[in-house]
Amino acid sequence: MEAFSHLAAAAGTSTPSELKAQAAASSAGFAYGLAAIGPGIGIGYLVGKSVEAMARQPEAAGMVRTTMFLGIAFTEALALIGFVVFILIGL
Amino acid sequence: MLAEAFKFPEINAILRWQDIFTSFNKIALIAVAAAVIGIVVFLLAGNKDAKVAPKGVRNLAETTVEFIEDGIVMQTMGKSGLGWTPFLLSLFIFIYLCNVPGIIPFLQMPATARIAIPMFLALLVWVVFIGVGFKHQGIGYLKSSLFPPGVPKALYVLVTPIEFISTFLVRPFSLTVRLFANMLAGHILLVTFALLSKELFQGDTLALKPVGILPLFMLTFLTAFEVLVAFLQAYIFTILTAVYIGGSAHPEH
Image (cartoon, rainbow over the protein chains, first blue to last red):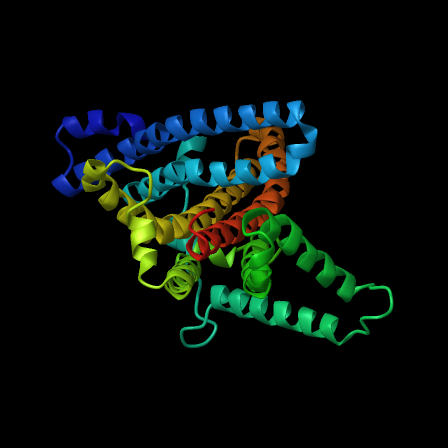
């Protein structure tokens, strides 16, 4: 189990570079998980509001959809940066 | 136990391909093929008689052009931006054809999952929208993008650095990372579920073999999802390009 590797490391069987790799492996998941919280809330709110707007005014649906995709693209960027960091420190 | 048997390969093992010949690997092959297919399809369509009802390859080309014009240019730049259709169309076709090999059997690698192609395209867009800004507004482009009107004078100390970073630094970076990370994430997900399914089917534990059907279902579902993602990422890259170009051509919008 990766998550408990730092406990095994605490028993004193690892070199510093191994310790570093283990710490990176167990914190990479947290990095991505934390990065996904904000964009998750943001995209949910954004799409919910867009659906509301489209249901109220179906004739403006095209415009709302374009703007919605733009908003999603900007919001999603943070989650994707988190994903890149996850790869950089985890693998 | 299974947890020990299942070992995810190194990231290089799923992304770095052997050279077919010197410094030309599968990703370069896909990118070249994407460019060639796009050019050939549109040349063929362009040589068809424009007076008869469109069918086959011309129908496809006309639908795509119409989609770019109505769905992207008219929505973001208006009528004055129609001259940008060829540029946006080439961008869209190239990115889409680079994305779609991620789900084509035996290719199974989106060329945009390596950062080189997204970064180059984003730098191209960066140069183009800054160039358009200087062409349309002269040196006033810097004023309108760095000193947005309607802000109290004292706040410019704060607003100008933020505007500089968000317009000239974050835009190309986020364009790159958005396309690259989306395609890479999709590719890694597909690899994960394919490997999991394979390990379960071929594992030693007999009781776990039927369980292998679950990751297989997930793999099928994700492959269908990747069809959508490939299109959506090409669309988002193109529409953001249109917004950036439109914004530097007409700052009042």
